[in-house]
Image 1: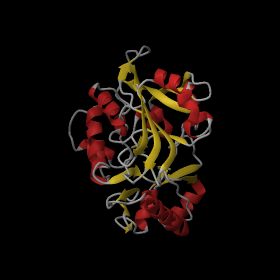
Image 2: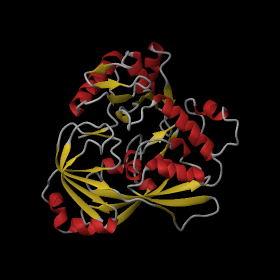
Image 3: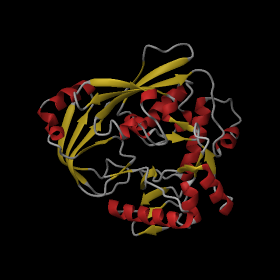
Image 4: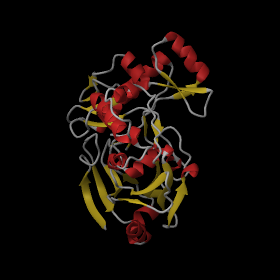
Length: 345
């Protein structure tokens, strides 16, 4: 199915709920139909160099103005176990438009390990690969087997293995070499039937231990949900896009000197990069007193300083103004440049 809409209101298609419209919206649920459509006259906007963007669940996007171009949105759903699974692993192929947390819930329900720490992250499956979403010591790359996509240069359906995806911290090849050249159509995840809990990040272990139950993926999922819901706002209630800023990864020597000035600053090792450390942006913002404050109708969440919120009627520009002010103060005090995790359009 290909569904076309003109002059579409985007306010409720993005979790920040800032006012914006798009000239055109293309929604699709079949990769083959999308490929055929874009090969023909439907793809003229690509060949003419017009502005376009991909929108998933809209949980990592901030619209600052009307979008003068075409939004492409996947509404394809579905999960299936595919050949290649064995007694120890299960390969789950999921359509790009599926809600990410539905995938996590299904994995946990089937006692499959690997996705449980990524519970309650608002995202689509396609975005999970673009963004390499992560939480509590786990990233999407840890369970991605391969990614299927539509090549926008020859309109052929292709796939790329995890090792070729150039995954990094909130980063992938889809933000670089394949940016503007690919539309993700499905992701294949590799889950394990062998218990492999990761509990040593933040307060996850003590929260899990409160349950006093047998350790299962579902028990960990429920603990993660409790932690996240205690400090992160529901975007259906108050507009936000989750963590607005990335946690910077910096040279170890710089971070160690910085921590001498601020002993309470949380720092984290970076896998595979012994000369670098990751520092907590939320702690720096909180230290500067921003938690719970606002500029106009855009504010910093009262429970989590990494989260910027739409207090009601905020424009995208108001959110950006707040973000820029915070970035400037963090740099002035800590000498650290922070950048948005959110896609600003």
